Structure formats: structure tokens, C-alpha cells
Length: 143
Image 1 (cartoon, rainbow, N blue to C red):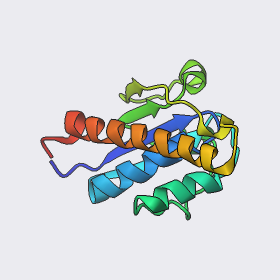
Image 2 (image 1 turned 90 degrees about the horizontal axis):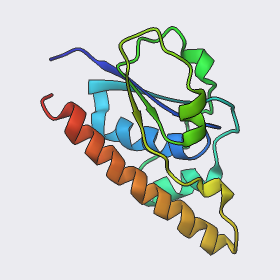
Image 3 (image 1 turned 90 degrees about the vertical axis):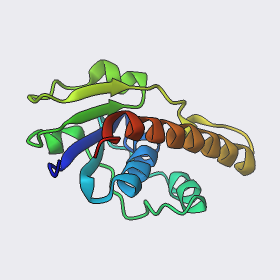
């Protein structure tokens, strides 16, 4: 099947969780899918998210923080919400998009020393990476 899939990862601010999943899916799927990420608000790309992904050899430093409305015309095959807030306010997409949801903790809300905060980011990154692999196995195994 050569049809390229469109995948949208959606969270509240498109700064951390959606960016992490976007990075892993883009790396794994390559040219099999166009991966987008967006927020129901726009908070800007979190520099700590960029740093923890770089630790795992995934470069998301060029990503931008986008509002979901920018992609209203894209026919998505998958819409993955990565926080409960985005799931609750997720716009209805006029397509056959398969909606998936997984609530990840928000590392941007972490407190403590810089090392403790980075540990929270790493923990969420690792959860997101596991989710990405599960998603790929379930949805893209045949391709």
C-alpha cells in the first residue's frame, strides 16, 4: 500500500508531549506518513523537550508550535490526542480519521531542580516512545 497516511498528534499547547510523539513517529514512519502536531492553544516549542529528544538522537529543534486550525483542510487518517484537555476540546475533523487517545503527564508542569525537571521530561519521553512503538505495531505493521 503506497498511500501515504496523514497523522496528527494533538495536545493543549503543542510544546512538549505532542512534539515528542511527532518526533518519534516521524523518525519511524519516514516517507510512509506525513506527521503533524498541533495544539488547541500554541505555547511554543519547549527547549527541554528538544533537549531530551536530542539525548535519544531525535532532532525536533526545527519543529514549530502550531494551532490545530492550521490543518483543518488536511485529510487525517489518525488523530492522536496526548492529553485529556485536548481530547475534550478536540475539534471534529471532517474525515474518516481514526481517533486515539492517551493521557501523558505534562512535563512542563514539573517542579524542583533542573535535574528533577529533566528527569520528568525523560520519563514522559520514554512513555511516549513506548506508545509510538505500540501505535506503529498496531497501525502500520502491514506496510
